Image (cartoon, rainbow, N blue to C red; front, side, top):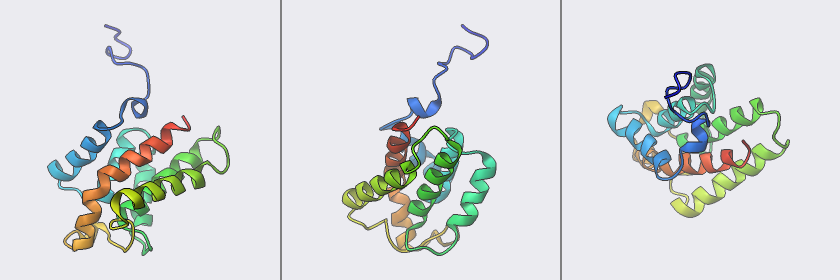
Length: 151
């Protein structure tokens, strides 16, 4: 066993985590740690190295602002933005294309139910926020699929 990496592959975690494990990670954060969907997305992205802990605090603050998106969609958008802002090797329009793909796929898969309206982590008891959190694993999976296009 290699002591430098304790026998684990040197491939970044984002390359290894995909369906269904990406969804299971978010389900676990919501169910076991009692997080809201948007908090689970931010923590999951931080754990996978898509953004730093400092970025996570920024995302929490920005996602709480009123938006025409649900909390999970707004958080996913901010995660993608942070990822592409720090990745200079990506085309300049990569963020816009990826975000459009996530939105389109989410709208089709979720019938738009979790992709509009507003919710935040302080309003977890709202029915719309509960629905948003139920769809967080799917949104996270779509987010990772887009990130994998631009390593």
